[in-house]
Image (cartoon, rainbow, N blue to C red; front, side, top):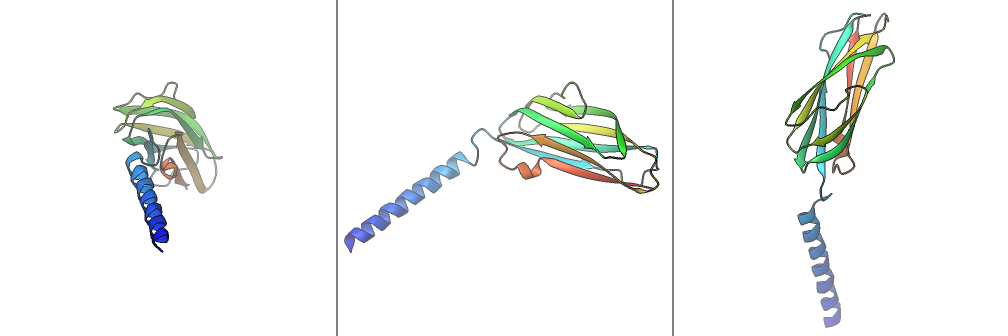
Length: 153
């Protein structure tokens, strides 16, 4: 009976040590949480006109992120007109476009993109603009993309 208790106590101590180790290391040592948010036009856009989308790519930490890939997709009924960028504690990628590479996105920094697309001559519907930021050591990749809809009238 004493041997069973001793084995149980050793097993519990081993589990506790593993839990303590995982709490101190975190999910990905050296990781950085990239968070993408955005805003689509709030009013309907006339067919054949341009729509402006604002998108923010931020690093919530805990570490700097290197080699962050950014891919922007424009909808079937639209064509990219321009992409501009403003850095907040980070340098914007160069060149700007549908596919970009950010060499370093420091923790606490953000990139603010303004994506302008021209709508095709369609009578009504919805156009979509999406942006995905990819970083291999992101502990929460569920926050790495945004899909924005604009209503066409």
